[in-house]
Length: 208
Image (tube, rainbow, N blue to C red; front, side, top):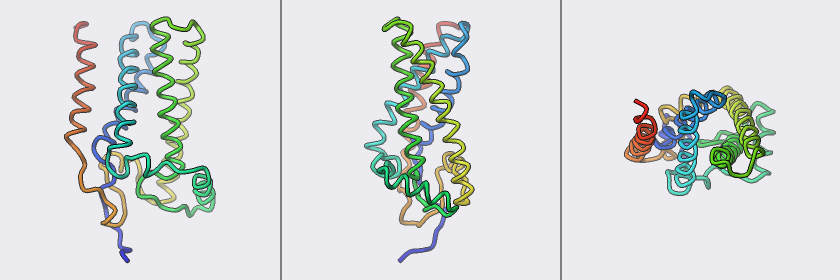
């Protein structure tokens, strides 16, 4: 039985690119939400957020091993068990997302969808003032979830003695050689980045 661990490739390129583009899009949209001057930036980044989430939903079914929802979305009992193990400071190690991280990801996706739907409705004056209020509430909820997610990443990194944020940059984590993914799909990541940059250009080029 193989017990030796080494640096293995866990996160494919599209998953990593999605993660950091989502961070940028949400942060940018949130920071420009109260400014009329930056309204086009806010709207563009909001649509980008929606497109990224749509991509992640697809990639969650057709992507590589650890990007698939079936690999990390667990039931309530497993989530609770992992939470209890964290309290003992000796949680079970997961090569991909741990059960609590999976909950955060699902909630972030759901809140992101709520933000995009209510934002679109508010921008097109569908549903009245309450839709705009829901949009603002959803944005605040996502900000809170991001904060919780960051705290969770720091805690898990400390408990497992691995840098999870760095892993989402270079794609590598500690594990058994047989558990690593064989392909990172750089081509898909390039298409994703090109699509986002192309959309931004179409939105902002006329202003130049």
